[in-house]
Amino acid sequence: MTPDQLIELKSNPKFRAHLVKFVALHCFRNTKLENLHAGKSPSSRTGDYSDVKVVTPYGEIPWTEVSRFNDDEMKELMIDVVNQTDRYLGAILVTKKGEEVVETLKMYDPVPNWNDPDWYDRITLEEVDQLDELIKKLKAKVR
Image (cartoon, rainbow, N blue to C red; front, side, top):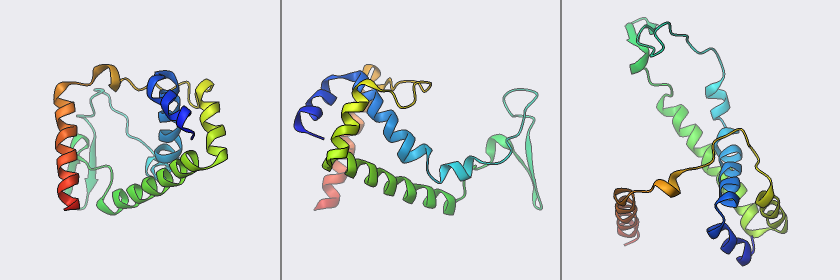
């Protein structure tokens, strides 16, 4: 990614949405999440899943209380997401092909059927304060 592309990314919400969706697709959606997503999903007559239960040898668990991932699956997913994100961002930020990907994303939405991100127009003061807290925590870890 060139300095000019970075400047444009900051000021062009359509381009930024395309890049964010590209990263979400390749660094989260197309990861081990697919394996966790595979299989059968329950149906609900009520629509809120209050009528669905998981039967275990130790009793029934209401669907609304069931953890969808165990700790090992979550760890495996997050390792994969971090590795995929590093791989894609590294390629985008430092290679000539990355510059070409960025140029293409200016005009091409990789997943046009997905919603565009909407946080930027709705960020609250509380969320900005949370960023301040995050920065403080990160700086404290460095010391």
